[in-house]
Image 1: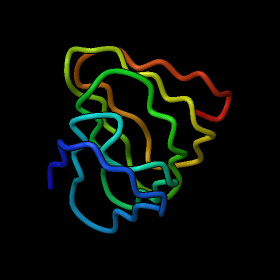
Image 2: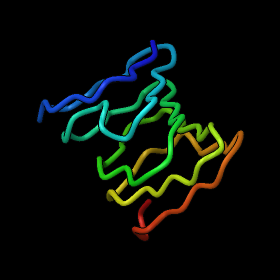
Image 3: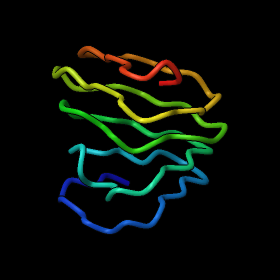
Image 4: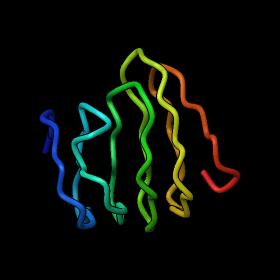
Length: 91
């Protein structure tokens, strides 16, 4: 599933299977993300949402993406293209 439009909801996002592709930093609202599958961030900018869960995070796209949330996901990180910056010691 690919999300490409801005969303303003404040509840959390649960990824339980498959891949959720975020085409912008604001597609997942302002709540925390529980990633138990694959979260692909195909965008640049600053991603403020905290990411937890057992899934992996994939950075794609040519832009620079900064993770600024207190992340605790355990599935690993794959940078397939672009640059990924972690601002928080837990990111």
